[in-house]
Image (cartoon, rainbow, N blue to C red; front, side):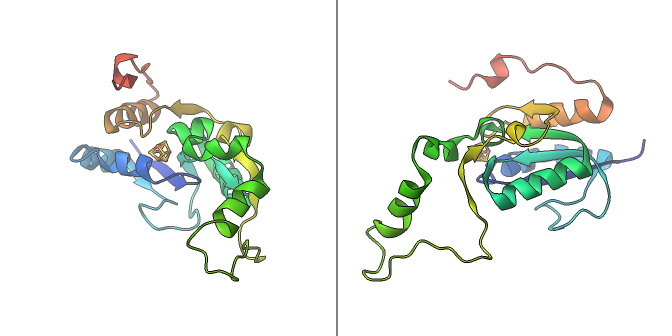
Length: 181
Ligand code: SF4
């Protein structure tokens, strides 16, 4: 069987979901037999060099660069998977969704006690990504084909889902494996 091509990206996430993927430990050797990674922090490819079968998205969208990247993944991947709560519903960054963007920026850059007095400035360079009014989960920007819940999803669930997507035999995730307490 030809290897499936996988792309991965972290948008407004903490890289915990990528770390969980690496938690596959020795199973990662089995995974490498089944897939090759293309654009991904794991390969450090910044651009796609070929079309991907599967795109794994960590994190939601907090700025226009995230949106651009997500749309590019949608164009370059047959199946797009939201991995983890940040991609699925905004996660921790979405705590700011109830607060006006201006208020967030003032709190972070003008009122923070570590700012040097007289040097308070909200960054606004044209090369910086534009911050969105709120955090958007990925499915509000592009069509998402599959979801892997968890913060982060455990390595076993990522493995089972990936194996299912690769073989075309997806099995439902049991409630017990998603209940953490
Ligand atoms: Fe990090 Fe959790 Fe968000 Fe994954 S879902 S990026 S582990 S905060």
